[in-house]
Image (cartoon, rainbow, N blue to C red):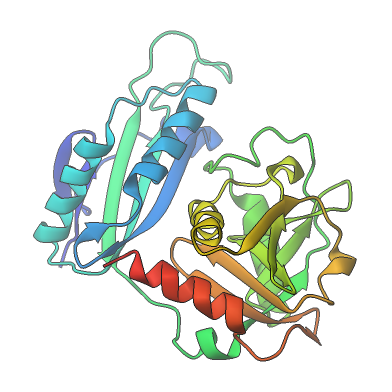
Amino acid sequence: MPNLIFLNDTIVKDTEGLLSTLDRGFLYGDGLFETLRAYEKKPFRLEDHVTRISNSAQYFDIPFRYTSQQIRQIIEQLLAANNLQDAYIRMTLSRGPGVNGLIPKGTYTPTFVIYAKPLASYPASLYKTGVSLITSHIRRSTTCPISCHKTLNFLTNYLIKREASEKGAHDALILNTDNYVAECAVSNIFVVEKNTVITPSLKANILPGITRKMVLELCKENGIHASEELFKVERIPGANEVFITNSLMEIMPVSKIDGHAVGKPIPDTITKLLHHKYKSLKI
């Protein structure tokens, strides 16, 4: 049965949604995307996701005219039309059709798609046993201007995630070219030292994750000291707890990095507390 999607101001069957073969998102990866969850038909932290894609669109000079309220109404329509309660939602924005060279000339009509499908949740067992990470051999350039934006140029992330998969790990830890811990292929990382939660600073050239932001807010609200720092991978094995975050997995404990156990028990006190507080926000 076809899924209904939103494509350029119209809700259509996904099998009938037509994109130009000259779309710059297809030709150059010239675009942006966001993924988020809906809980009980309610898109979670939508405003934060719209703000991030809007800010990135402004940075790359890609027209984006939708407000959070307009997108909320569109998503609610899609969830109802597709009979979805808990859902995976993806917004994709490209500069639109155009082959006037790499540097855009003239006015472009952007392509904007919103897609919703049933959420494939992470196995509940992983939140009890934790996931494993490896350290990728691929480094993050400290001067790459797109690393802090969620762009359609995702092949490096693919290679890093594939490297992790081939080694039987869930994700891979990325170090930047200054040897500081950055993030993982599809998640931000946190370590807990005693009672302090630490995450790589944005200065490490990372994506400003929405769930990352929420964890820092939850720490502040619950009297947990939190810090954004530049630190090296050698600091991680001595951590009491390690966890990773993104909008789909929420807060996931890490049990091993490069085959070495991290923290005990899994999950430990602060990881459990933050995940509990995070889940309570959805109600």
